[in-house]
Image (cartoon, rainbow, N blue to C red; front, side, top):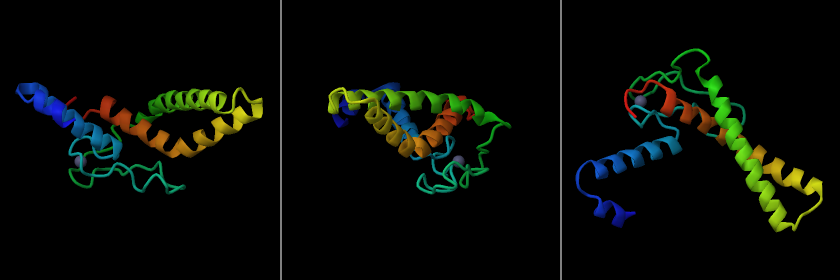
Length: 139
Ligand SMILES: [Zn+2]
């Protein structure tokens, strides 16, 4: 990574790579899309009862995380897509690892990873939704 950024040190390219890195980092940590410092969610993903609850506003810059009522309903689409991807990956892994096992093995090896990744799946769907479809003034 260091070599790559040294090679493209001139002009906008370097700046935009840096900007994208910062954005990606902020997305991975579920930070505010505007200041990239305030937390979007009230608790960690491991808090089973509140993992999906958003703060109303950014604690650092005051940006509202709820652009309009029902804004995050569309994020269910991303949740679905990621769910299907997990389904396929673990289904294929079960096929490879257990050498074409009986059907119940597929059920278990798909259901458990899907269940475990659900909090992150739901949270990152909202993050993607806000970063790419929220009115955050850049992109
Ligand atoms: Zn902020």
